[in-house]
Each structure stands twice: as structure tokens, then as C-alpha cells.
Image (cartoon, rainbow, N blue to C red):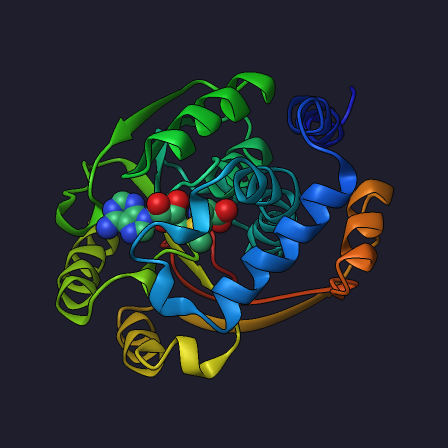
Length: 254
Ligand SMILES: C[S@@+](CC[C@H](N)C(=O)[O-])C[C@H]1O[C@@H](n2cnc3c(N)ncnc32)[C@H](O)[C@@H]1O
């Protein structure tokens, strides 16, 4: 069976290089990287996802990297068997995190992508279509979400964009969902200054029977991603991230 990831990546290239050159996307990858690393105060005003260049950079470079990272984490934590009928992706962006998890499961659960950015939701819908997933998208603020029963949750690179009060509320809600059996997976970058709240969350997850992990996966990036990575002066030969996970069924305890 053809690898759905490879197929998606090829379709992404076609979609975004139709109107932009490789060099334009490369410059936007660098601009986006600067926003996420040095100018985080600009994220709230929507600076990360405005403009065709940055959108293309996000969709065809960062999203596939996030997909690959989440897929490795799902495999390492043995989450493919988590018995959720659907997976809701909080701050789904272009859809990569829940897609990576759902595609590891057989049968694939339904995916619900939630974001407040309408461009991201449009892209997420396209991503799910290309990957052959059953999915819907919802334009919503994740800060006030209530997760239905029988639903897994993934939030990748989203929780650190929220204010502390909303984060606290979501943590309490996630713990309730975990208690009634919903698998929960949170993924964030390793950089400590972005995740000052991590220690408290990790303790809460561990107390609830879950776990926290730091990950470094050395994987061979697809050629196109490798090229862009190098051209933009970045180095993703190792995919890194940290996760919090609570799943009564999937998580292997060491
Ligand atoms: C860094 S992106 C990550 C996207 C995706 N999860 C991924 O891993 O590629 C963060 C996403 O969260 C969304 N987001 C941030 N705060 C939000 C909120 N309060 N409600 C809904 N979406 C939010 C942004 O619009 C953006 O799409």
C-alpha cells in the first residue's frame, strides 16, 4: 500500500509551490522559525499564519515534521490500540497531529480538527481528505472546549500558546477525561522557557497514572524536507519534542 505520508507530502509540494518558489518558501520557513523561537509575542496577533509565504512554510515544512514527530511518539507509547471512536485535535493547524495518530490505528478513528484560524481549518480539511481520513473541522476556541466521551485528545504545539488560566482549566478538564478513559496526548517543544508550566502538568499526569517523556528521534527525513531544512539553515536530522500522555490502554509503563 502506498505510504499516505509520502502521498500527502507530494500533494503539499504541488499545492504550495504552484504560486511560490522554493526560495520564497525557504525565506518564510526562516521567518516562521524566528517567530516561534524569538518573537513569540507576535503569535497571538496571528503573525505566524498570515501571508502566503508563512502559510506555505507552515503547511509544507513544519506540518510534515510535526506529523513525523507525533507518529514516532504514538508508536513509542503504543497508542495505536487506544480505543477511542474519535480523536479531537486541539489547535489542529493544518491537521498533522491527529492525522498521524489516526493513521496508526486500525480502523482509523474519526478525526475532529479544532482551531480558531480559518485558513488552518481549510488546510486541515484538505489534509484529512488527501490522507483518506474520516474527519470534520470546527472553528472554535480550544480554551473553552468540552471533550465528549469516547474521544481521544491530541494537542501538539498548542498548549504553550494559551494563557495560564485557560491552561489550568484545560488541565483539570483533561484529567477528568483521562479518568473516564479518554487517551490524552500533549506534545510540546523541549525548550524549557516555552513550557514553564510543564513541571506541574507532568506531575498531574503522573499522579493520574500517565507519563511524561522527552524524545529524540533520529529519522531519515524525506528528501524534499531535508533539502528545505538545509537551505533554511535548520537542522531537523533529529526530531525532538516532549509529551504528556494518559491512556489506560496504550501506555507501556517502564
Ligand atoms: C503551532 S500551531 C500547531 C498546529 C498543529 N497542532 C501542528 O502540530 O502542526 C498552533 C495552532 O493552535 C491554534 N490555536 C492557538 N490558540 C488557539 C485557541 N485559543 N483556540 C483555537 N486554536 C488555537 C493556532 O491557530 C495554530 O493553528
